[in-house]
Each structure stands twice: as structure tokens, then as C-alpha cells.
Length: 146
Image 1 (cartoon, rainbow, N blue to C red):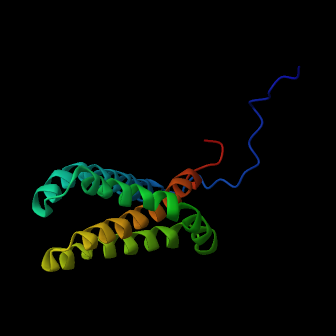
Image 2 (image 1 turned 45 degrees about the vertical axis):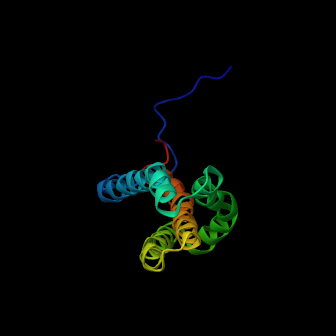
């Protein structure tokens, strides 16, 4: 078995002076925010169940719509990120998630449960695009040997 020569430098494109603090901080913040949004579903279920007098089946449609977006949007999001790149994919995910958040306002005004579910689906679709974009982007930051 041959020995590994650890004195040999790696043949990768390294930029030792490049500072990755801002991109990593921004991505860490995004990871926290979409995790927080996901956890808020558990708070939303009993509130909407009370407001709309929902059955347990109807209340669980909240989770179904949110996590169903991951199932439906993941592959198209991957194709989108392949075309746009990581940074534009992250921006696209933020825009879609923001639209999903804004859709909660008409849902409150009209007081229709299906609009809440639609807003959740759009919000989760944006988070899916964010995850598909941000995970490999964070992986690509920094030197390849780390």
C-alpha cells in the first residue's frame, strides 16, 4: 500500500486571501430563518384549526401543503439552479418565499382557508429553492481541500 504524501500541495484553485465571512454569515442566517419558518407550522395548526373550525384532517393539510411543496418542487428547483447558478437561485428562492409571505395578507382579508394553504405552498416552494441553492453554495465556499 502506498503512503500518502502530506507535504505535497493540493492542485486546486485556492485563493488564500478570499474572505468568506459575509457569505457564510448570510447563509447561516438563511438556514436559521427557513428552519424557523418551518417550525412555525406547528404553531399555525391550532390557530387555524380554531379560526376556521377545522377537522384534524383539514388542519393537517397545513403540513401536507407545506411539505408537499418539497416533494413537488425539489426536482424543478434543481433544474432551475442548474440554469441560473447558486446565487441567482438563492435570490429566486427568496423572492418566491417573500411572495408566499405576502399572500397571507389576502388570506386574512378574504378569510378563506384555501388561500392560506396556497400561501403556505408558495412559501414552502421558495424555501425549497433556497435549500436546493444554498446547500451546494455553502459547500462550494472556501478551499476545495476543506
